Length: 418
Image (cartoon, rainbow, N blue to C red; front, side, top):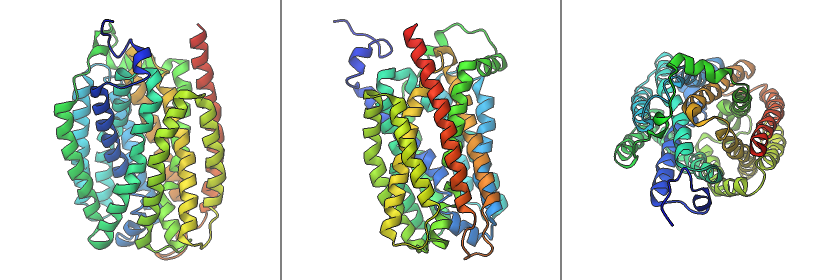
């Protein structure tokens, strides 16, 4: 049998990965780990940052949203150019900027400098996810992507098992600055590995497309099928961001878990997340993805209501609630992302992923700003108020998201029939 490219041999590649594909999965998982850790670490550090920098809940919400909104702006700008360059070069350019932004975060000393640093980090880091998605779609067939997404999304669990607990320990024993230095060192080492291991990705450049960057962007936005995918992603992100920024402050000030024990919660949550993600990925490739997404949505809705109404309880109960909540949330992300990856045509893939990522970041930024305005903390050690309100809003957003993911699923099934 003659050799064939990964783009065409779906029967073979649906069963196994080549050695190069395995390397790419590993590198993209670590890449996602650094991006997720850099973003997610703000929430666990929230209580420390608000107290050490005398930030209000509104200011902290603004710091969280700064990354997301700046990432949205850069993503929209990059969308028109995303399919005009070798994806490897594009990835390395933005990752270098992300590393620089992380360094500025590490040397920040007040609300203003941290706010500016997060804007810089977002301008570069926010585009990396869309480039990674385009790379996955270029290298892996639709039959493989659920499994690949499961492995790559393990970065969320990995950041909780290793990154966040270690970051919190560094913050408690040295300072929160040390946490960003940890991310900086890891990102720098990965950048070197990407230079030598990732091959150029230029197949999309062979497709004739005479549109300039702005035309390409506008044409991508105008397509009705694409807009359905965009709305699904935005709602998925907005629901996830709603309670995240103030979760640690809620755990410390409302549930009365000591700041030094917060790392334990993230550690155990991460262990179960990293176990469940590959399982969800395999199930997404084997069974109906909409069904998996629906089950995850039901679990997430129930656990959000429980979590946002917790009163002082033992840490073991907080861990269990947090684990089941994250299983629900992540069980939504994997099948939804795999479905959305099949929406764009090959020549629109980079632009679609960039716009998709931009809307995801913008929705998350709006959610963080909204959270900062809704919740109230009257003094440094007083309880977080109105956290339950965020939970109810999140439930509504998850139900709306299910509707649009359903629409994406219908769209893809119609294409199969044709």
